[in-house]
Image 1 (tube, rainbow, N blue to C red):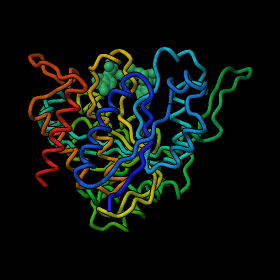
Image 2: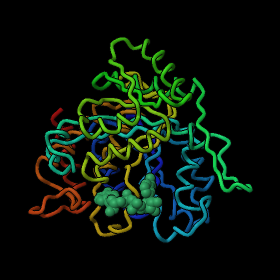
Image 3: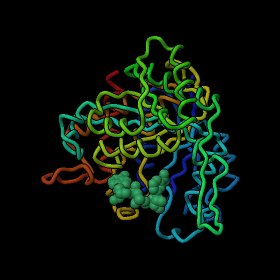
Length: 375
Ligand SMILES: NC(=O)c1ccc[n+]([C@@H]2O[C@H](COP(=O)([O-])OP(=O)(O)OC[C@H]3O[C@@H](n4cnc5c(N)ncnc54)[C@H](O)[C@@H]3O)[C@@H](O)[C@H]2O)c1
């Protein structure tokens, strides 16, 4: 019987629709070859939604998201909406989606393709072979803790933010990190600031307790400051790195630099556990999106790199649908196309003619079809 997966597509703004188109056609290509059907429904988010209905995410599209097996998002934002208030800006649509769907885990893999090791700002010998995943807690910590406010009295201005975590919030994200590590190179680094912060001491305690359930996975604690240095001096020594919201925000951006272009990076935001093994149903919902923004400087010019979106589609296959073999096909297709020297402008060398977004997408589609047929 043909398996059907329902995907809500939210292309958003700028290059979002361009890269999502390419990624969706890669999905359709690999699905058709393995008797899997992806049923796409379209919705609006960000500036596109503001222009159409006055809100960055309508309740109707939120219902569509809940009715889907996964959400696939392009990017939101752009200069046209920069003067909007915090609550009505395009980004508010993304925050609403994360909050309403309870997406507490943000996964950002950074894999350096051999063909692109030279494109990194780091030396080839440091970055070659790096393949890590930052797992960031997304719904707790400093960004949501109360009190969070500014004050003023006769002595002057002051401000406070609060970093609260309950052990259950730490347990679920660290447990997820161990499950992910089990499918990768079997190492977890838990990042904290336990030499100073109470919240980090609790984080360290709970992370150690969770680690006892996974004796076959190597486990280490790291202080966030020294970890920030290690990430760029010895990135190949990391596999899965798990941390609270603020630390994750900072270190995931630092890790992104390793890849040489923002256009290369995928992400997933999950609200539960991915499938325990290939072919089993996910116990969670996921939203998938490239890490980059709407890139207004190159939007509409066919210059956007679709790799981040295509690899986000591969994460969807793996984490939401349990289709690991198809995900591997997509990952390998991207690697092969890069090996062949097909590059969009952001990663092309000085002597290379850059491929357009759709030329790159077609090359991946053809490769994926060839790999799927050969299986
Ligand atoms: N998740 C999101 O939707 C998201 C994330 C970040 C920024 N934004 C929004 O996007 C808008 C632009 O923000 P920004 O310029 O700071 O970040 P950006 O990621 O859009 O662009 C930063 C730089 O990277 C380049 N770039 C980005 N994606 C690329 C791709 N796929 N291929 C090739 N080059 C690419 C851009 O051309 C630009 O030079 C803002 O409105 C911002 O708020 C949205």
